[in-house]
Every structure is written in structure tokens, then in C-alpha cells.
Image 1 (spheres, helix red, strand yellow):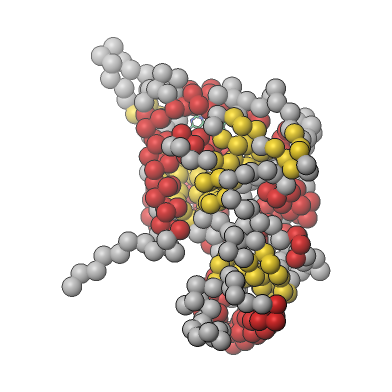
Image 2 (tube, protein in one colour; image 1 turned 180 degrees about the vertical axis):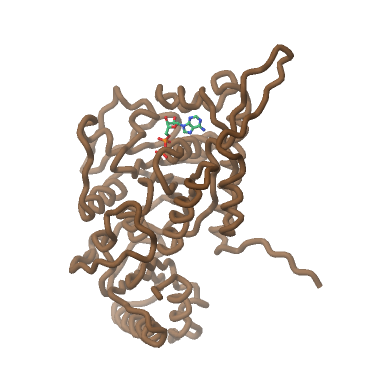
Length: 401
Ligand code: ADP
């Protein structure tokens, strides 16, 4: 058995506050990330002074360890952080797990992640993203399923709805954004120690791909990946954002753990193609998010179907090349929302290869209206899921009397 978010939440219900009620019922628990024997808890108690924070941290530590001990669960590291009402870390107690504690093997299954390390994030390191309302991670079980494509299209779709949107290329092993966003002619700029995002296609984009030699392989050891990704998040001048969309590397590994430790997320989107083999990997990605305490906002089925050229009468035929509906069934099986499906579309591939993602939104340059319509469905569903997640995960329920 390993530590999970509900288990820790339950333990925190045992911690009574001097003002009455427990930590959970008082809404003081801002965020929990748990992974095997490692956990990090963020508390929002603006009224607590330094002494009260110290007391509460030690009571929280004792409560979680006591519950874990009774259930036979090991606790290797337990971090307790106090945040202000903007989400900025005020003080940290104990040690949170570092990315080095998760093996760099990108195909590991959740539950295999145990590699104790002496490193812990110092308090001043605790990242904050002031002015960013919703952080959405886009992940996939395997590479090549269209994760970066979906991240780009969702970011642009949200921006086209009038939101202020940031797009972070977190795929530090194989950044795709320089090509997909057409950043070739642009150079990365730093002002006052802050990386300036590229303002392209209506979004603020940041990618490591513009800071490294495109011909060289990006080989990161666990702690290096942790550091590089953290810097991209923290050292960028994002300004005010409604949404920050993060394109994660494929599989399970260091970057998602760093992300879960660094930011409070609205949730994750899992991209999957319909085939069984892709579903198996996507299921692992969803399980990883769960283990990290990140809710999955929904599943996107990419390359769902293909629409052929019109015949002499102008009629088109749809081909289910990879088995349309496979990812949707997977979502149902896992009890996850299904955000929608994108067709296989030659114009989409051509637009992204040419750095013209906006071309996917206009039927004249998107191979017809199927793709723009499908992207709109995805963005609308994503917005609804984010709204639900923000309402304290309150999902609609039906009661029959
Ligand atoms: P990942 O991020 O999962 O590795 P990418 O988003 O980089 O995958 O996509 C891989 C390739 O497949 C890219 O060339 C992209 O343009 C293409 N592609 C992705 N989705 C589609 C689609 N629905 N139709 C056509 N080509 C697609």
C-alpha cells in the first residue's frame, strides 16, 4: 500500500484547529500530492502566525504518520507547506520528495517509484505563479499520439475564446513548439532575469527548444530535468493568465512529479489514439496523475477517424482507421470525462509542420469544417471540466426520491 490523496485527506480530518473544526472541513487544505511513500501537503491558513504554523505542521506530520503506521504504509518524506491567499509559499516544514526520487525510466508503471534521496526543496525555492488562474497539463502514455498537437490546439482555441493563455513546452526531451508555432526566426529574450514568452498566434509561448541546439540530443538525468523544467515555470514573465497549458513529455517520469510539486493544477488532459496499445499506455498516464494527486479533466481521442475526399456528388466517406471510439471507451472504463475526438487531417499536419496552427481553425485552410468544429467541442468541454474542478470537484449528481 502507498500514500494516496484520499488517505492523507482522511488523516487531515483528524487535525482539529483551535478555532474549531478540522483542517479539511475548514477548507485549509489547498493541495495534496502523494506518490508511494512520499507526500507534500499545502495548507492555506492566512491567520496562522509562525508559532501556530510550526505547531500545526508537527501535528499534521504526526497525524499522517500515525494513520499510515496503523495502515502499514511507509512514509519516507512528508512536506508541509503554508501558502498565502495568492498561493505563494510562506513557510515549509519537512522534506518534500524531489524528482530524483522517481526513476527516469519513462515507461515505469505507477507504484514502482521509490528511490530515496537526501535532497529537499528549500523554502525559498518553492515556486509560485502569481496571476495564473488555471494550470492544465497535457500528457500522453506514449509519444506520437498528438499530445503536443492537442496542447497547441487547445491553447489557441482558449485564446480565440478571449482568454489570456500561456503555453509551456514541458516536453524537455523533444520540444515540438518551435516547429508547431513557427518560432524559427525568433530568439529567446531575457529581461531582468525573466524569460519573455513569445507572443504568437494569440498565446504566450515558452519552449526550451529555442535555448538549445536543435541538432543535439536532449539527455537529462532526473535532477537536471527537474531543474530545467522548474526554471521554465518559475523564471518566465507570464503576467496575468486565465490558462497555462503545459505540454508534458510522454510517459511517466520526472517532469510530471516536478510539476505536481511545483504548482497547484486544475488538472490534466490525457491524449490517446484509439488503438488498444495506446489505451494501455494512456491508462498508465491517468494512473500516474491520480497518484500525483492531479485530477484528470478528460481524455481526448486523437486520429479518431479520417474523412476521405468528396466523390463526384460531393459526398464524403469516413474511415475508422485506428478503431474510432477506443479512447472514449477507455475513458468510460476509467470513469474519466471524454472531451472529444479529433480526425486524422492532412491539413492539420501540414499547418503544424509549417508553424501555422491558426490554419486549423478556418475551414478554408483546415480541410473543411470537421476539424475546426471538433477543436471547438474539445475547448468547450475542457472549459466546463475546469469550471467543475474549480468548484471543489463538485460533479453534478442525480438524486431520485
Ligand atoms: P506527440 O506530442 O504525442 O509526440 P505530436 O503532437 O508531435 O505527437 O504529433 C506527431 C505528428 O502527428 C505531428 O507531425 C502532427 O502534426 C501529426 N498529427 C497529430 N495529430 C494529427 C491528426 N489528428 N491528423 C494528422 N496529423 C496529426
